[in-house]
Length: 55
Image 1 (cartoon, one colour):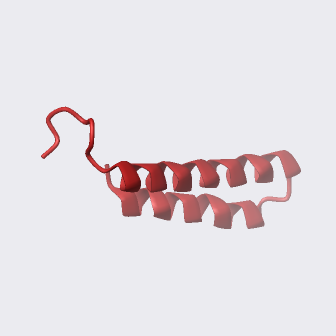
Image 2: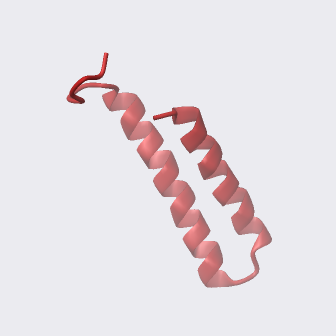
């Protein structure tokens, strides 16, 4: 998994949330960005521990 790609995706969702006028869509984009950041942080902290076949 490419962590910088997840971070960029989170920033993209966050930036898009400022452009969207519908409140539900804005909330969904903010949640998606938070999920992308959270996954990137968890994968960075955990690393490849417990992943079979990862070198």
